Image (tube, rainbow, N blue to C red; front, side, top):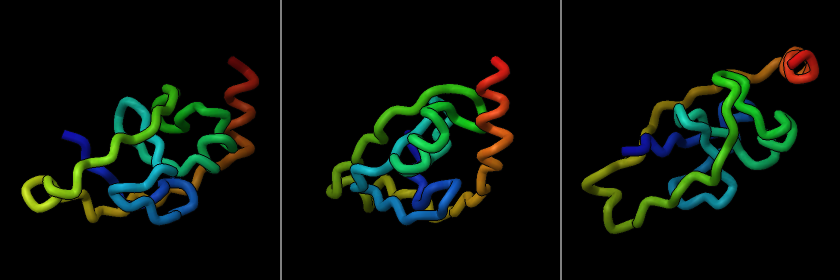
Length: 87
């Protein structure tokens, strides 16, 4: 089951469970759409791509609550882009 993380890892923008801005990679790293564009759609943690995070139905939130753990690890954008160019 997805954790549904509450914020963007890079900019810390709030991404509630029903956000249309939330994007995730295969390891559930969570970023907002704006940061995914800056990252050229490549996860800085695993190197994978991003997909829109599904929205958990509100009626299931009590039984399957979303994560409250904030993971805020701003990306060194210059180093990330340099790594992408060298691949």
